Image (cartoon, rainbow, N blue to C red; front, side, top):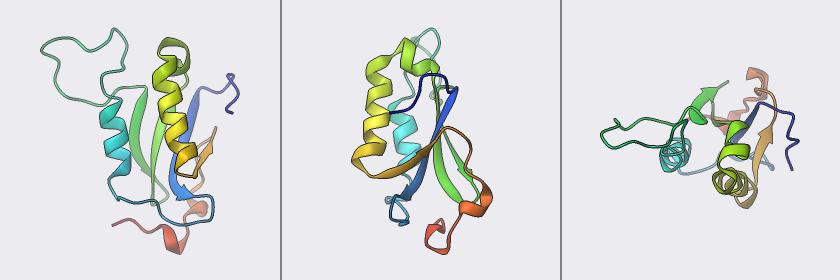
Length: 110
């Protein structure tokens, strides 16, 4: 469980045994599912965009999703969804950005 004092959680596209998580667009898919969870909620006519609380990125060649802890308080079910996604898929999580040195040969992007 992630302590509530952290401002962000990084879900990395690397499994605990070091394999690259597939499919290669998993981060964009997860962030897309979470796109309606945003400050003020989704509004009619909003353009499609990622939520500021759940953003896909690449750090050190590893696909990641940065989850803001505000989601935990404001949308607990959405928070549980992303944390359970990471747990169910055995993905590495951290409360700090993974250093670029954590990128391994098996973590190459497509």
